[in-house]
Length: 118
Image (cartoon, rainbow, N blue to C red; front, side, top):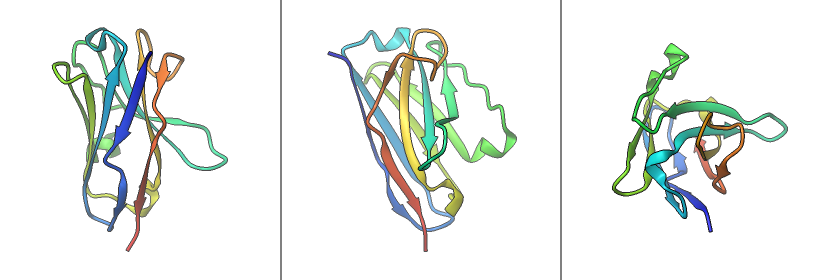
């Protein structure tokens, strides 16, 4: 049974940091491309960052350098380090594991809430 379990979300003040974790089980984790996505109510889920099975990342938006994705294949875990958080970063964050393109299918976690507020 495949499971992706996110953790690390919570309430943080503007300018603060959080590190999200997504622990995977039931898959050959090192084979999978991983992605972090965010979704607000009534909006489509959107990609935050992705990392390939080989560990390559591609920051498509220069503004997203506040967020850094990484993975530890020995722990079957992918991380999202979130710095300089802003209120507009408030969302539910999900991780995805896919053998091809993250987000187009594959496996999803249940999500973790991130709230940035003073």
